[in-house]
Every structure is written in structure tokens, then in C-alpha cells.
Image (cartoon, rainbow, N blue to C red; front, side):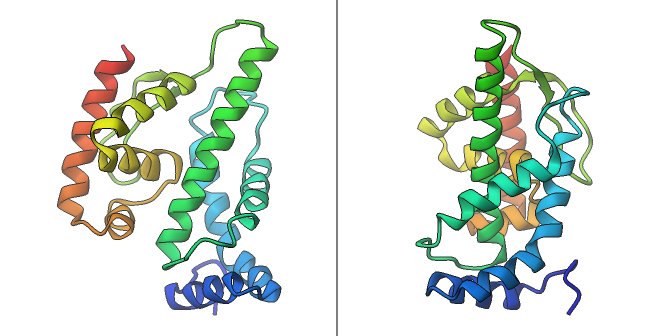
Length: 190
């Protein structure tokens, strides 16, 4: 099996074995998902300003370190794994932005582009990463699904279909909620 195009059943089985304490399963799982996580992290970091201090490898490696601590998670499948990875990467990126802001002692927070992810028309506008995190937390208080959709697509790089699978809703629902959430975030962040 090609390690660059992981098969969902193999990943699901490896996740279950890992949860039961099989350390070899985690090593094998890493071979299957590393390339995909790296691709997703790279796509996200391309939106960062030039010279950003967090590199793709660093983001993926830090995410793996944090994922190792999540062995107690009841893994469902490949998409569930990438959904958890999206949450982990979001936290890493937010923590990194906060640390940079502290280092600059009140300096300007870096702007990022919130745009459609893969195969969807682009609608780019600048956004402060910390402000985005705060807005997502606010959005989650009245529409948790929309906040999760933004997290999965923006931070995790999941496609419309992958996001629908993780949330157990139709792709049409994801597309509609993604559009509503983006409009709300645009207004909230202005």
C-alpha cells in the first residue's frame, strides 16, 4: 500500500490498535498520515507572512507530539484523526501567535488570509490569528457546528466531503454553514 495515499480502513485499524497500547501501530500510522499532515500544514502556512518562524516540519512534529498524548481518544476513522489534528494545529498556531505578540511587547499581530479551502472560489481578506480564534470561540457559543466547520477547513485543511464525514452531516449542509460562518466572521473581524 502506498504510504502517500492512505487507505481509510488501514488507518482506522491502526488508530484502534494504537488506542489499545500498540506502540508499533503508532509508528506504522505515522508512515501513513505524515505526508498528508505535512501537506495540510504546508497549505496553511503558505497563507502566513513571508519569514514566518514556524515551519511546516515544526508544525507537524509538534502536532504529532501532542497527538501522542491523545491515545485515550476513541478514534473513529481517518477523518476523525485529521479533525483532532486540526484542533491540535489550531492550538499550536494560536499559541505561536500569542508568543510572538508577547515577544514584540504589544507589536502588531500578524495577519493571515481566511480563504476558501481547495476547489472553492477564493474570497481572501486579512485577519488577525488571535482575533480569529476569539471569534471562533464566540461563534461556537451559538453555533458550534459552524465553528467546527471553520476549524476543520481552515486549520485542518479538510475538504467539504471530509468535513461532512467528520460532522456526520451532508456536504450541502457543510457548504451552507461554511458560507454563513465566513460571512459572520468577516463582519465580526472588521
